[in-house]
Image 1 (cartoon, rainbow, N blue to C red):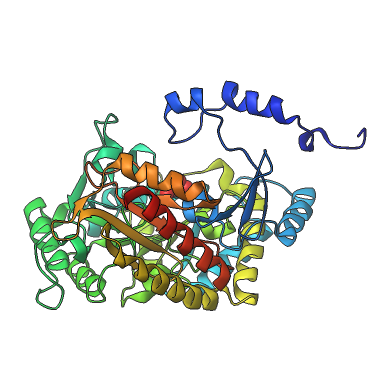
Image 2 (cartoon, rainbow, N blue to C red):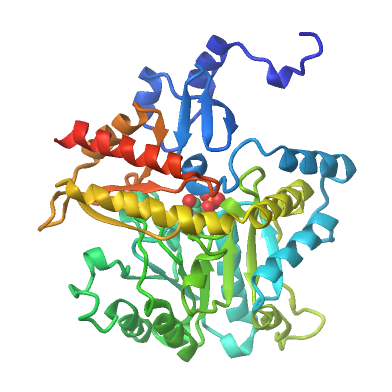
Length: 466
Ligand SMILES: Cc1ncc(COP(=O)(O)O)c(C=O)c1O
């Protein structure tokens, strides 16, 4: 006992009481936090996590928010981080360090049309950088003068900070936090299941993309500098655009010199069966942001990756050479934490060496196929997804597509959890549309684990609705 470091030593009841006393959990009702003992996760291996009471769960969410790509308990990541921390833990990103250089080169290998990598710590921050790049470029590059506005979709999420929230749709999630920043312009999502233009795919002209031009013209194309999109919308309900969507959107953006910002925070690193979500489409965004799966969330890391022309916009400032700012005037303290890039390098090596993209494709197809069988239930309105990223939309009536209530969703989730499986759901994000269950297991999932997840969800549907 004397040799045990104190950070591994705890008393169960003390920790349960401490959790109640001291911790402010994310996205949890303060009321239920007071009355119910909360789950405290203490261990993980593969896809399995164990709570403080010794109960084991199959995690179909990669850590709750789709980010532990390579699974829990990877000693090689911990060992690599430990060695790097002992050698050189930190120096601000104003200078280089070896893990940053190696990981930036690795990222650019995966993004051959891009040229520069800017590190920070969270998805929100990576997106803030993208917005600041657009804004500063609109002030110092005469060719982009006045192009400061950012466009975003009404069901996408881009983060928790004020800039990122201003670029987020999801009205209910934003409720109570306004006013938001000026210069953010919303446009409609592109999910066929609830087509915003009341069309059916095959009998439409991809209005979801084409109509965006009207909004650009209404706002004034000379004022718009960027457009942020999630390749496949995550928290907004697993919305997979049709293949024509991004090429059309890109054509419109290029016509008006609007930089497309692809938010790969969730979809990057194999989640959807390709290394990047946008690789499913013929599209080549100017700016790409990423976080979550970057280091499989063993460490906090995000990046904003740009094309050379974006980087070079900072060299175009015609002001007096003594006063001009021909650099991106931004810094992020923890963008200099070397252990984060070290973890990212090792996590990416695992994805490559263990062929996890292939597993994401095969197991993703199998998961979707198994979930499709749940359409037999009256409450399953839609099943959709790509790779290991799938969702089920629950409705009270398949014809009207009326969403089940959030209370019913909570009950359904409880019935899944009671069978020791953790799945995700849209959470108080859209008034009347918080009805989507999501699945994003670690990329190492097996067929048997897929079978367990689907069987558990089927039983929960029966218990909740039949
Ligand atoms: C698509 C997307 N972008 C950005 C973010 C924000 O990332 P973070 O929570 O690391 O700030 C999230 C978080 O869920 C996300 O889903």
